[in-house]
Structure formats: C-alpha cells, structure tokens
Length: 485
Image (cartoon, rainbow, N blue to C red; front, side, top):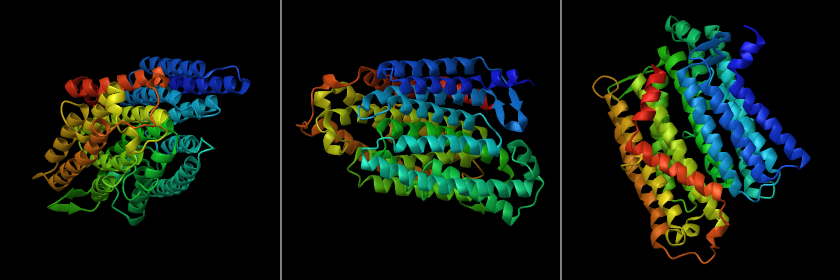
C-alpha cells in the first residue's frame, strides 16, 4: 500500500488536523474574528463528515491500527457531530481569550476521538487516548483567570495521567502474555490460553483507564470538579464526545479482545472474569452517582454525579455480552451525549445572563425564556427516562437487553438496581424543573437579547433530536445494528 492510499483512508482525520492548523495560523496572525473562526471550524468538520461518507465499506490496515467499517464510520460521524455542536457552544464563552487556539485544541481532541473509534489495536487506542486526554486537560484549564478552571485542569491531569499509567502497564502485561496488541489476535490467543495471574492483572489494569474515562465509581473523583470548573464548552465535550468514544472502544476491547475472559456476573452463577468487575463498577456508579446528586446545589455538579450514574447504566449493555447488548450501549451513549450537550448549552446561556450556574440562577427561567425552559425540560426528562423522549427508549432498550442476557435472567439484580437508580434520579431532575418554572424570577438576570443566536439554534436542534429519536428511534437503532452486523 502506498502512502497516498493510506492518506486517502485517513483523510477525515487529516482534514481535521489541517483545519486545526489553519485556525491556529489565523489566530496567530490576529486576522480572524470569532464568527469567522467558528465558521471555518464548522466547515472543516462538515467536510470531514463528507470524507467519512466517501470511505470504503471495509478496510483493515497494519493489523487493526486503522480499521474502516460501518461501525467506525458511523461513530466517527457521531464524534464529528458532537464537535460541531461544541464549536457552536463556544460562542457563549465571552471570557475565553485566544479563541482560535481554543478551537484548534478542540479539533485536535476530535482527532483523538476518531483515532479511538477507528482502531482495533491496543497501542493505537492508547495513542488516541493520550491525544484526547492531553487536549482535554488543556481545554479544562484554558480559562487562566478562573481559579476553578485551573484547579479542575490540575485534578483532571493528575487523575488522568495516573489512569494512563495503569492502562499502559496493563497493555504491556497483556502483550507479554499473549504476544500481540491486536484485538483480533488477542481473541484467538486468549481463547486457547489458560487463565494466568499476570494476564488477569493486565486486563484489570487496562480496564482502570477506561473506567476513568467513563467516570465510573470509584474512578469518578475528577468529574465533579471538571464539570463545574472547566469552561462550559470544554465540560460539554468531555461529558459527550469522550464518553461516546470510550464506550465504543471499551465494548470492542471487552467483547472482541477479552471475550474469552468474560466470566459471569449472574446472581446465581458468579464466575471470575471481567464481567464481575464491570458489574461491581456499574452497581457502585448507579448508587453513588444518584445518591450524591441529591445533595447538589450547582447544576453542573449535579450533572456530573448524574453522569456517573449514567455510566453505570450504560455498562449493562456490555455485561449482556451479545450484539443486542452492545447496540443498546451504543444507542444509549449516543443519545446521552446529545442530551447532555444540549443541557450544557442551556447552562451556558443561563450563566451568560446571570453570572452563575447554581440552582438559584435558573429561578424564573420559564418566565424570562420559555423556549430555553422547554429545551431544558426535554433534556432533563430524557435523562430521567420519561416517554416520549429518547432517554426512555434508550433505557428500555438497555435494561431489556440486560434482562434477557444469560440463563434465568442472571442480571436481574443489576437491572433492578438500575430501575431504582432511575427512580431516584427523577427526584433531583424535577427539583431543577421546579426551580425553573415555579420559583420567582432572579433579579440578577439581564435582557435575553444578549444571547448568541448560534448557541440558541444549536440548543434547539439538540432538543429536537432528543425528541425525534424518542418518537422514532428506529433509524439510529437500525444503523447501529447494521454496523455491528
């Protein structure tokens, strides 16, 4: 294969890198305004999506370092779409200096997402994790005049670097015991290799890094500070794009590479493997995330602990262990990403008007901006899992897949725990809606005319998508199922 063939297959990633370099060059010459830079970034992302659609149906390069398949192409498009909406949300952050540099780093983080979902080789996956992680550390601490942003960036970096060390050490142990880092080869080697302590340690240490990325308890300690302290577009991209890519890769690692070491987490037939570990992470995440969210008075921090619980829900599909369960995980994480991105869009506009994102800053939002209040209601009720919103179908699809998995409904205990957690979450989501619609209007709010039109439009489009995928989820589900087939 020539370099031109390689470049053709990697052209979506290369085009995003070129867009980032052009944006960075414009920023250094001080010739670009914020709207121009935003437009350039959006056009670059749109062209990258077009390039993904032109990729061949199937291709595997260098033993899985670059994989082109319907699944990878679909989630490259999802990652690019999330980056597109995040660029739109960046218009709300008037305090961001060096705007071009911010957008360039955001685009490089998107390249990390695309490398993650487009690889089936552990070292390339690790490179994608590091490219994504380093970009997100900078995006978190980008607002240098905000002490909370600096604190969040430092905590994110310390936790993230420790998790990366665990992951790399785990990969080295897996390579030492299996002789390969390709997921397909690993699946063959592990199926004929007896369980060994070093191999088990390598699998566990590899999973630690991904538990950090999805903010699963007890590896969630970075999430509340990052969600609250980072610039809102940064927090939105961490909560959406990073989660989607991490679950795609985690699913491929567990269900392809480490499938023979699955074990069982059925309540009546527990067998050692990664399944009991994942079930423990899911149970801890659901309980801790929902109960701690009850005590929060800051909406961004509430969404952080809610994200911990939703990470626990999403793991149920991986525990189901079949194609139906993985498709449920992919559908739910995509819907969750769109929902949370929209919720952060509303938070960005409220913060721009009132100067804060605590609960009291949302008081009277239903009076001063009915459209924003309706959008926030759609997002929160979808997170709670109420019909006819996308979150309801996502949870139904996820929980039913886990319920049907195994013999004698072995995951019933975890499904019951997830239903209990969803019931708890309804309470704290309704608290936010009660403040929005029933509490008196905040006197610190300014005229709504100051809102950036692009952010309002992006938020409205996301709300419409959440409603659309709730009323008719078949289109997205069919594409995910077809990609997995």
